[in-house]
Amino acid sequence: MICPLRAAALAALIAGPAGAQSPLDGIDGAMAGPIGDAVEKLGEMAADQLLIRDFLDMELTGAEGETVGTVRDFVAIPGGKLAGALVETSDGTRILVPWQLMAIESADGKAIRATQAAADLTGSQKLVDLASQLSD
Image (cartoon, rainbow, N blue to C red; front, side, top):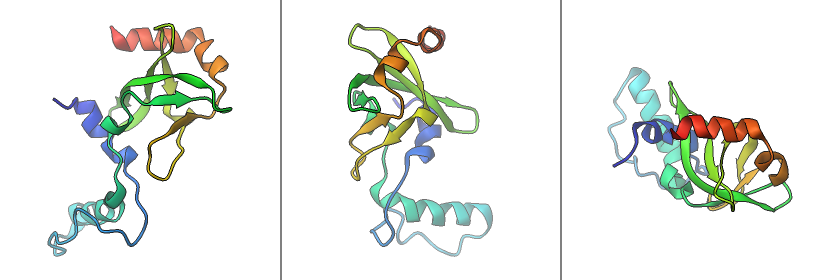
């Protein structure tokens, strides 16, 4: 079963190059207003969509390529914006890595990197405490 927060956060992970075949091609373009605009925009981006499940159990690397840990879950805030990823380090500790500190690295979306060094992230008691609050 897909978590509602994961479903709400899907829009934050969708990306795709122009000119690619979209799964939404062929949907009636006569829709007007906000729904039509949203369908059109999503259609433009959906060809190479990235789903939350694509990132689960993926290794998160630090700014210098070192391993931070494994992505176990994501946290979204009301409105559907991703707040961060719950990452399990090699010693089993979970940290919350803020979304602003992460970047999708490869064109196929199969690599995710933190913009900070692994030692900075794993050594932060604040990130451990936040993850603990969210996991309870």
